[in-house]
Length: 134
Image 1: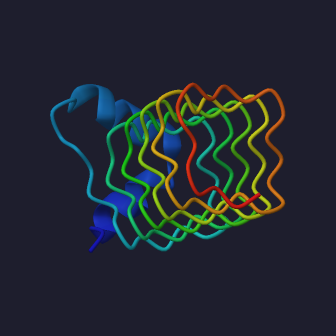
Image 2 (image 1 turned 180 degrees about the vertical axis):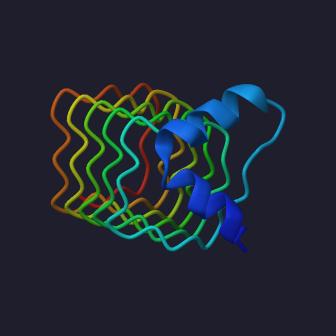
């Protein structure tokens, strides 16, 4: 379960990013976090555990989600323009109607990820894609 203190800090992205720089060894546990419609533009969420979090309609423009655990995460209609998702695990994630323009999905795990109605223009995908619903 996500730590409420971490969620409050995350919603202040500048403070969050400073904290991440000062604490590089801490891998934030934000599983099951309720972050619907949150503005997380440019947030450093690399290697964070966001499994089963609700990030529907969240602003994740240019967010660093490199190697993040996004298993079964709800990213319905999320804005992921230019997001770095390299090596992220999106197994079973809901990206229905998400905006992934210029998102980098290189080496991301996409098994059973729902991309129905998603906008994937100029995305970078360099892996075998299995069971994707578009």
